[in-house]
Image (cartoon, rainbow, N blue to C red):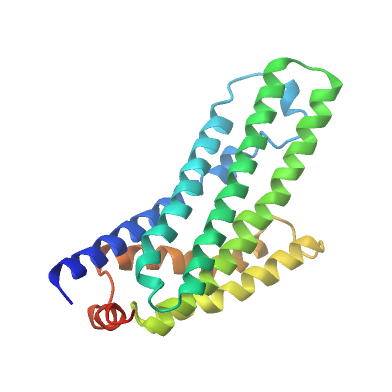
Length: 229
């Protein structure tokens, strides 16, 4: 493998790792959106800074979702093009739903600005509920699918240590179980149990981000992949 190829793969791992770490900027939205989804928010006063900031952070996350998959695609497609395409498609879908969720939050803010009528109050409550449901798909179900696909690709290619790849594979299942439990009302959305279900996925993405930034791909595995057509 030529030095240019090695440099290219390093750029891919560095870019993907940085973007995975960037997705964690959305953590504050859990607190920032707390008031905007409360009944009567559209009738209240005060600044909308928290809601607007949360929306901006989620836009950054959505773009980082797409960028990370695109950065990994040229390398991962040599292991399995169908799975690599599936990862890109899943990340784009995740980002699209995040954008829709942000649009709902911004609509609630717009209703608040327009005035205190019964229709805006009901619409604001409905949009808050819809945001929560979209969140279950965009930031619970799809991340499980993403990490399962990525974990399999990384495990088979050995681009990163196998234990790290296994966290992504194994972590997908409790996240899906937690999602089902929330849907059926067994546990509350946003509660401790739901957070625990997402722990391995969060650990995988955070660890992968740091690994790709500071270590990069296993060069022996990258060389082996580069020899595939």
